[in-house]
Amino acid sequence: MGAFPTQLQRIDGGRLLIVWSDGAKREYSIWDLRNHCPCAQCRGEDLAIPLSSQEYTRQIPVSDDRTINIVAMKPVGNYAYAIDFSDGHKTGIFTFDLLRQLGQNVDV
Image (cartoon, rainbow, N blue to C red):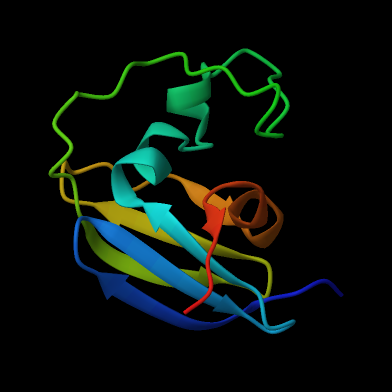
């Protein structure tokens, strides 16, 4: 089994910090997470688009309103989080692998 989140923390500036079991710390823009939602609606329901960050193409644009926030994060099994966003969107399941691809490494 790969690394998994051990700590989630909202930080100033519309950002999320995830501390991983292997000691890595990654910081995420909440707007960027929303913009990379992997749900079928955002990807295009009938398209088989790979979820790797290099091949991901958004099918439904997200508002440029960068004040989007996370309302809730709920674990999905031992492999992902379902994220509810303040714009009402809540169908995206972000696997740990996808979360590791997104965001930036930080030294905190």
